[in-house]
Amino acid sequence: MFDNFCVYLDAGHGAVDPRGNYVTAPGKMYKHTRGTFHDGSTFYEGVWNRRLTNLVAFKLEKLGITYKFLHHDYLDYSLPYRADTANWYHVNYRNGIVISNHANASGVGTARGFEVYTTPGVTPSDTLAEMLWQQVTLLLSDHIRLRPDLRDNDHDKEARFYILRKTLMPAILVEHLFFDNFEDAQLLMHDFIVDMFAEAQVRAVIEFASK
Image (cartoon, rainbow, N blue to C red; front, side, top):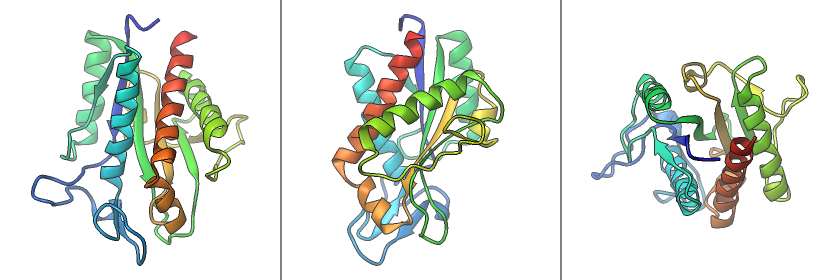
């Protein structure tokens, strides 16, 4: 099932470099007035994205499923570089899928919930997104809010994000709650929540590859 299959994992944006500098856009962090996050009261999206993606990779490796990172440990690789890397390996190494991991922000701190995105139209990406949605619902619906778009009879939202448009294989972009909302940010710091998000991705990968 997995002999010619690779999961191309992307942890969105940059993270904190060895000097302690956050190397991505200012909008990818949020300083809360209470609580403890990555740097005191500050939540760094790029740091959280890597925490989740590393856990997904760990679970895949335990199962003998090949994966490749499209991101750097802390540098903010460009979107063209990430997409081109996935495409090169997809053509020259192994067929695969792309999962780009993010946490969301509304700018006002009031929005909450989980979303998954594909490009407009009906493609195999929709199948992967729906499999992930069902697993997240199964594992986490008692703990988090879900933000579906049911207008086209599935749960994913549609957008023309670069990583979705420019990759050759099925690709999804996942927004794991809103880090500028205090309640959601607290959930994202909880080991159980992170583990279940990772478990949902691995189960969706297995289900998608088996079909």
